[in-house]
Image (spheres, rainbow, N blue to C red):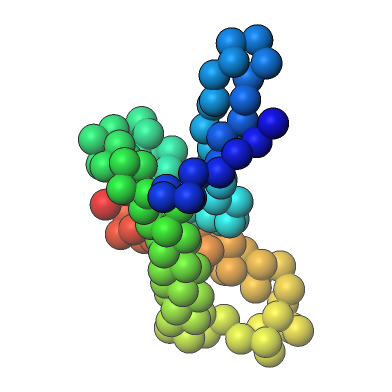
Length: 124
């Protein structure tokens, strides 16, 4: 049997064993995807910055923080890769003429950009 308190708006369910009304509370979990960079940030906070992590959890800002970090990291990766490609002459023409060299250069660019993002955003 369920009843609702008009003043608080809470619903209560009668426990048949104890004959006590128990609040019918539910916790809504945040199921938004925080992405790769958000997961890395969460791991870093959990292992190295427990106080900051607890603050974010206590203020219900953890998921928002992780999503913001993920978006900023993706944006910075795109920007860094584009700048490095331009500076090093990695073009579609190179890709068409010497695919192996293009792959090597892109792998190098990607790894360097990731390292910068990790240091600037994830481990900050």
